[in-house]
Length: 575
Image (tube, rainbow, N blue to C red; front, top):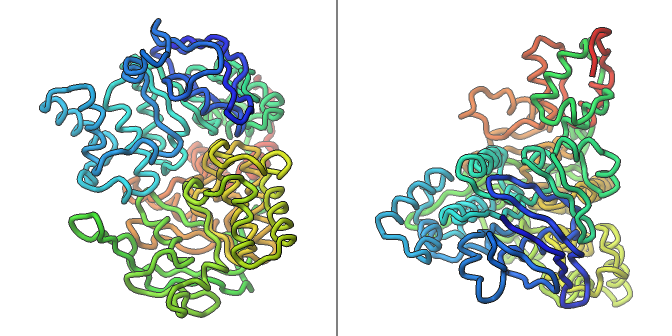
């Protein structure tokens, strides 16, 4: 058992992060931890295995207090997977990274080889056995970080946003594994997540706000108090939201399967009416801004044979659109968007910006001034001593006057919810993962790009800040900016995207209007043929249709709630 007694932590700058945390975490139990960005979740996690020393209070693991002298024993018992997988990957190849912790435990070579093979297969990493971790996609690196932590078979496992960069298939596999480790192998798991759907699958749910524990109970109980969650800037699961639209609650439908059962048992389905299409358009009349023609790219450095990341990719992105690039981890999404602002030079093919080759000037500098890119890991582009200085770097570098630079910086910080008065003098490294992501977006916004590319921009954001970023992207598109969004969050893609490109193994599988692409992908046949998971609303739609209901096409939470709200309750049914 992990016992946390009156835990307090104050950052070196004097900012309090944890205030009197008192809680125990049991073995054989999966505990989810939710809270808004900056609430102290990661700080708490790092105190549990001695990565941070509390300002006051204690942490004990199975009766052993976490102190400097007990750290080797504590870290053998308590493994941690960080928000950024690069923080945990230390070896030159995937295989040796998994073996690293086993070597430290002194496992016999034969047992070590057996364990490594078992983990490679369980996490679908065998094909990358000899690959350097840095050549994997973000989602693949996240899988490797989780695999390496599990390989040492700790007593407790702390997961800090482990699914944020995973595609839906890999996310579901990991969630099933988390449950299995707790039930069958007795692991105590603390799963930090911003996903209410993931939290709903835990045995227990903790809520953290402003460094204080403000909720502790079964997920069904916690999610039954929607007003409290809303006040904490958190959200209920999709199923609960839909149930509430029909005067139900988490008691009736915490999970998607429960929602469809509850609806078909208690309601009559009316003839489908016309639903407003949210965030999806046909693109008619919009000017073409960016275009890729037969774009191909091979990685050759650090691998035994060339890796074809992109093959003959064609796509077009229009002005004022929100264009989503989706697909499984390793399908080439990040490689593709890094070509769109000349960070990578194609092996063959061209990228055109307003009809001109972006490499026509020989170095791509012109394109980089007009096409802004927010990286998958915001730490990769935050380098100044303070947030304000970091955001001001772009305007200063582009020759803005001090007055104009300050105006742009203040405006960008305000737009992402990080006002200068509160955050301007903070170090980027003193921010939470979600706050760093918003700071990185602000730094690109301050330049005033004509095209804004964001690689997993909402990963790690709490629901309130997800909405803030989503609203910002919608505003930018309405003002004529072309927004390119790389994401595994298909619900968010369904809400925002006007157009979608689906990649599979470096090739374009689908490209076009968002609604048509999502419906085509969802109806693509067998699981082996599907490259993306349907949005939750569309999965509900298909389940209800399989029950004989006549259901219109539903893509978004808003559309699903509107449909459910229109249903007529059967006179004999009860809650």
